[in-house]
Length: 252
Image 1: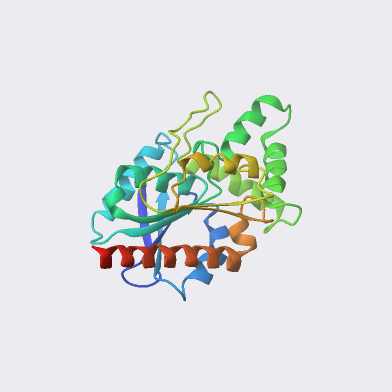
Image 2: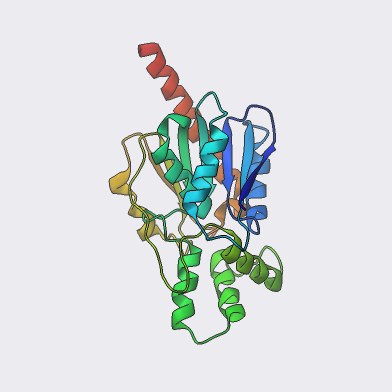
């Protein structure tokens, strides 16, 4: 069955980083290491076994079970499918969410790198290994963070273990829209999955105090390539949310 684990970097976290891709979570570590001296951050991990149906809704339910123990709202953040879980949870339980930061999440949340894989799998007459090798280069650029063979294995594992809503037989859509709480949407100009035009699709859903940010490069996993720049954007956003909340409480 699915389960979660919490890796506390400090007690009483202010920020909860969501991780629903066990085989790819190491690419978040440079950002988390940069953030940890500046803010109390914990990592929520979702693991799905091979003998159960893939369900993003189940991951949302488990996240809700964990956050029931938190007395105050928390900043949620996540990349890709992990961010999608945060988005769905923030809509379900806005009172538990102080803010939400989405990295490489499309306005149609079901669009992930997995979507591109399944589309290309139907169109391209090549092996799964060859296709994943091509996708690896598009996700990370010409300089891969680990050897190509190992990266292909990790992507293959992610297809099996992350709660993606797609399969070879059907591509699913999820509800579009924003949230009632403060929202930061962050992307890369060189991301082939959530490209700048796709990222702009968030604009109709953003509130006046929400933020849309782009980094010039870094591809899909730009938080790994530029942890300091991404970390500073996140820290500034969380600080702005805190100041705004304080100002509202003083007015009240």
